[in-house]
Length: 110
Image (tube, rainbow, N blue to C red; front, side, top):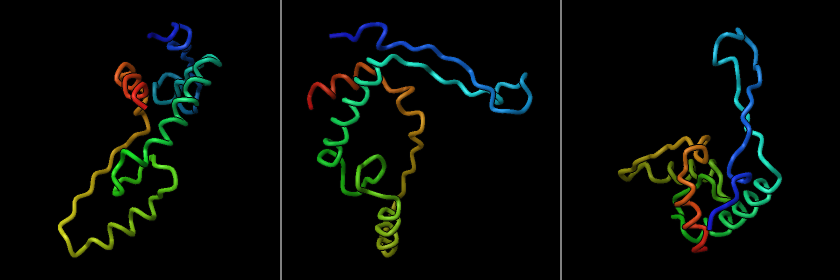
């Protein structure tokens, strides 16, 4: 089942942040979405939040409700006597590049 086009598309405008107007870094893109999109996004977000704790490792702190960076730092400090690895992922633009078809398949399984 596919979402209607008006839900999956948006209108992108650029807001001037300051600086030289001829430089691209002086502009911030913002995408205007429909109310339907916002409602669906909120429903999906709430479903994902409820499921994250069940499917994610107790060692994952990012994007998990009730888990904080401070807890992650304390856990990491307690592991100094062991061999440890650290993975840092910038998720600030994650949903700009996520494959929506895959995300929808995952959501259908929840």
